[in-house]
Image (cartoon, rainbow, N blue to C red):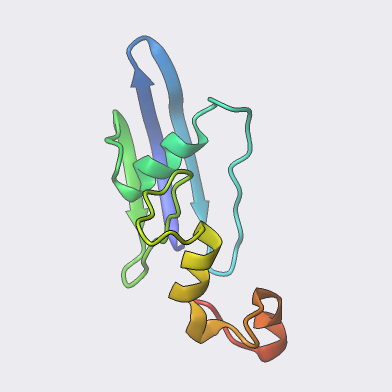
Length: 110
């Protein structure tokens, strides 16, 4: 288990966003949050990273694991696009400057 969320709860006033939400992600699994605009996807991610307080429940991250989060809105001062920022931050993992070559090169992205 890399990440486990148990009985998450979040409301803004009378509007409940998450009620007893639970899930876990195992090593090597991929996960996606899918829903309509305003459904609470970003709120759930912010709760997981600690940017938004939980009204109830637990978020458990396995020992030695870290989370990466790229918010929808960024305050970039460099003038670069988000893609350019990510590309420069992860340049040591790129082969020929192309993210598509990650798997061909056999390089894992931490």
